[in-house]
Length: 261
Ligand SMILES: [Zn+2]
Figure 1 (cartoon, rainbow, N blue to C red):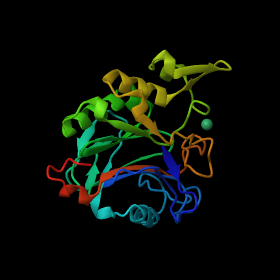
Figure 2: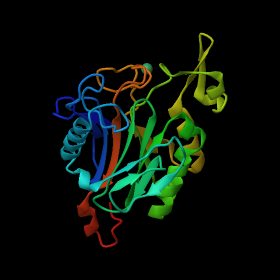
Figure 3: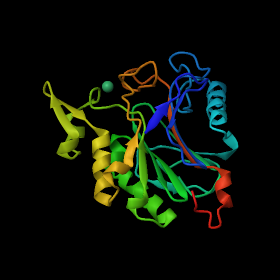
Figure 4: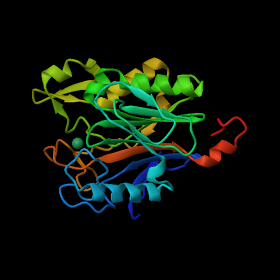
């Protein structure tokens, strides 16, 4: 179960019963300094927002999570299925997902409608951006496998947390997109196809062996909730980006084998 601390200076979604030493969060559009149409907590550098505003927004969010930009790893997000293993801070230009077992690292992927996934296993975490292109190319499966390999565990030891993204209520797609997805993830309404990205991702994860009850999170519709989220589609492309964030806090290094999280 996840909860949104609506009254906080920087409101974020967090696990209701957080695991010690593990950092997991989904940001919203509130709590930052950016002006419209990036108001206010725009975390994306790929926008026309003022860079200094984005830097301040990132600082605010990371501070609220007990971290800072010195420990931040981000992905270039080219809408592919590539997963990068992170050992130090910085940008991984050709990756859409990040995985690490290094305590202190903070992994962040950005989105403004696309599905984001945070995955946890004993001693390792992952963050993935999985829009329709990435999902078609198998990103949910790819990030799961990368995490399992790094942690040395099976998919039954993994928990998956789903971030706010555009839900089927608002995600009308053309036939050229719809036909690339399993029929169970596409619904028809008024002669139009509506895509359920989460259903498509879930199918990949279940096929790999993730227990159904281990898939949760905060899958709110970014397009329906304009006061809380940036939505690329609703705003016609000119909007900010929210983050999905995962990390292992440094205290977890005190475990004898470094895996005890
Ligand atoms: Zn919606």
